[in-house]
Image 1 (cartoon, helix red, strand yellow):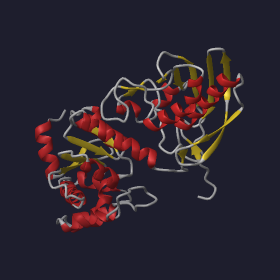
Image 2 (image 1 turned 180 degrees about the vertical axis):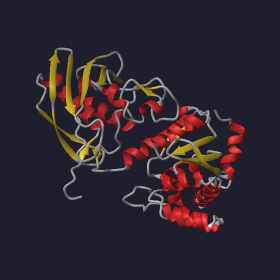
Image 3 (image 1 turned 90 degrees about the vertical axis):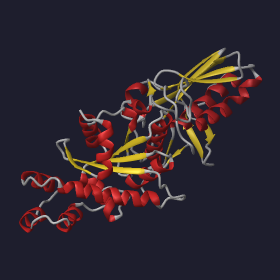
Image 4 (image 1 turned 90 degrees about the horizontal axis):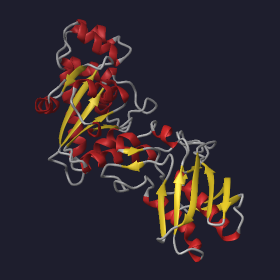
Length: 369
């Protein structure tokens, strides 16, 4: 970890570019670098690129540096363009900055996807310019941002046309998990704001594709949680969803029975032993158990059960996962007694391998393809 490097957010890039453009309009020279104080208290020295200065406008950019954090926006240019305007300070998005179309986010529908903290940073950087003009417009743009956004959660959140300008501290911590967790909670907020009383939590792409194949669900109702099973389960319960469905491969979801709330392979061992223990407790015959004990993967266990016509045992595995998820939720303060849970287990071929009692009840009222 000592070799990992901190970076800075798109919000800091936008504010730094705004600060440089402001100084250019006040002094007649856009600087090569600016020093920006971030909300975290850390000062950044940012290099200023792509300078353009006229009597009544200025434009420049800062290149995003994500440090050691894996980030699709690393290396992109974030531009700020300032012109006079009739109001005090108007902040808007241009090319490559998304626009919000759904409720539930920190920015209302219709506005550019520039979050509140970056907006405050941009505005503070431009305030000195009000001595020269009575009002000004700041347009933040990210060339190529629309293409980058396809690799983010933005399309799922209803943010169209580009990336978001984000960041609460101004700093990107190396290998941090905060950005992904923020995206997860934003997806939950959108689903809740759209009136969904049920959310379907999937570990990843397999679960999402299997949900699309087997169930008729609005896209916003399905929330990808990655390895943050416990975190997402708790956050969904806190938001008052009447029902939470966990849907994915048992290789991920069964890890909850070991108490693993983070299912990353570096933190959580494979789940074959958990599932085989349940199969034994539920009365699967010894011959089948001996064979399945030698399976190197959970998928191997599923296929072994399927070939023997014993796949119904996975319903009982799903019931165990459901009970554990209910326990986790009901321990939240105050206890979330009204939240129902269901578990859907898929195999690698995107077929349904197991349904818990709660999932069967949900499925009855839902309909399948």
